[in-house]
Image (cartoon, one colour):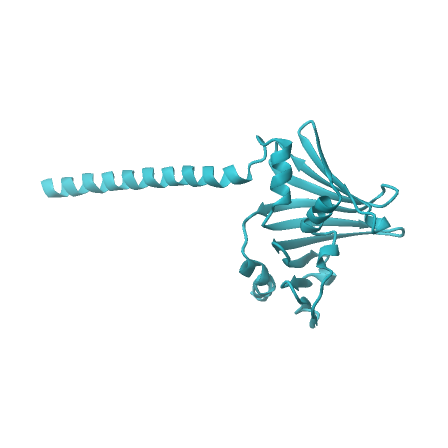
Length: 225
C-alpha cells in the first residue's frame, strides 16, 4: 500500500514538472518568435529596415485589378524566398483555381493540373517586374528612395516607378497596432487605384527555398484528396 502511494505521488510530481516545463517552453518560444516580428514598438527607421530586409514570406492575398473597362478579383497564396525564388497559386475565381506560377531563380513554370496546363519559360528574367509581389515593391522602394510616414498608428511606405504609367505609385500600409502589413495599393500616373492588394494573412521569415519550390506539389495533393 505504501509503495502504491509513493508511486502515485511520484507520478503526480513528474506530471507537474512536465507541465511547468512545457509552460515555460511555450512562454520563451512565444517571446522569441514575437520579438523578431513585432513592429508595434519599433521606430519608423527600424520598421523600414525590417520591410526592406524581408528574407522570405508566405501570404494569402486578395487582389482587385481595375482596368478602364472592368474590375477583376482574385484570391491567391504566395510564397517568396530572397532573392528570387517564388511561387503563387490562385484560389479564386473557380475557373482558374489551381493555376500555379513557380520561379526557381532561372526558369518560370506555369501549370494547372485541372486544365492540363504545363509550360516552362527558360531563363526567364522578368519576375521582378510583377507588382503583385512584395519583393517588387521593396526593389522599387530601394531604387527610387521611397519615403515612410505614420499617422494614427498607420505606417505608409511610398515609392514611385516612372517606367510604367499604370503602376506609377506604390503604397504599402502597415498597421502598427495590429502588428502587420495590411495592404499594397498600386496607382497609375493620375493616382487612380489600379491594383489593390489586401493581405488576409502574412507570415514573414517563415520559409526556406524548398518550401517555396514545393508549393505546387503540396497544392495538387491537397486537391486530389
